[in-house]
Image: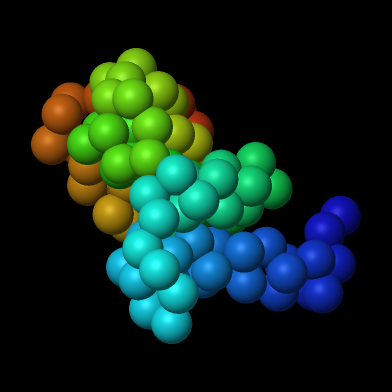
Length: 102
C-alpha cells in the first residue's frame, strides 16, 4: 500500500514535470520534463501517465512512438484519468479494466 506521503511525493514529481515542461520558474526542458513524468508514471500517477503518453504522441522530450503513447494512455485510463479515457475512446482503443465494468 502506498502511504499518503509517498502519494504526495509522486504528485510533486509530476507537478515539477509540468513546471519544467512549461518553463514555469525554471528553464523549459522537454527531456527533463519527460524524465519527471516517467518517474511519477512508474509510481502509478495517472496524470503523469497521461502526460507521458502525450510526450510520446508528439515527440516532446522523446522520439515519437505511437505504441508507447497508447500504452501509457491505456494505463492512465485504467486508473480513471478522464482525459486518457477520452483519448482512447476517440482512437477506438480498448481499455480492458473499464470494458470489463461495462
